[in-house]
Length: 348
View (tube, rainbow, N blue to C red):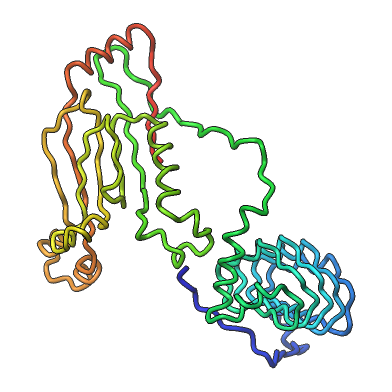
């Protein structure tokens, strides 16, 4: 994931006290950090209402557990729980996805919840001084150990979750317009799908997603099932490679411009756009390709901003002009006279 700029809290934790004059003039108090220390054994539930906090220091106390309600502090970037007596962590800690630093040093942790793997923005994880399994510590002590450990926890999270037997509800389609039954018309469905080819579905970009869910073979199966279940007459695929084949459709695929200069073995991995259509319903009149960098050169009029934004990429667009076959018109008329058909535009 691209990392946003993060400035860790000042370890000296300097503070200022508002003067009486400042308070009288209506100056607002602004504090985003809180430190609790002094052999504290339990935390007040009112602490979890301070959702504006970005840093929470609770080190050097006698806490044995952390309540699940800590996840309500959704703006926390820094959380220090070091040098307590914590034996276990709540799974809800994995929902605090804004965290950049999580310090758990010198506690009594023997296991870590797999949900910690969801902390995809975490940069620092402190685990020293805990009786954790050697397998976990070996992974943690490797180069880039924090990231490797989080990936391990995330990849194994699915196996630890009790799956619900109930299935999510079916997608509800919205009818935008009813067909006009007073005049002949050809009814057809169009589907647009951004596939996101394997090259762009990387762990660096999607750090919150398990690696097995990013693999193309896994995604391809689910994508194909959804596309085929919609049974559309025209299918437009974006950011796809030439590895999607549907026998009942004619395919017009065009890779990005750089494919022309590549070897055949490498060319097949270049993504592009594809249009599929049912040959029994449509015939091709024209095909058009738009190369945006070439278009920018012709219309930039010397604009440096235009060239810098477009010339560094080889994005393309594909347009196919289709003609409805006569048989389809007759078939649609027959259906409209026998049983009205509700037309739904499907866009995924």
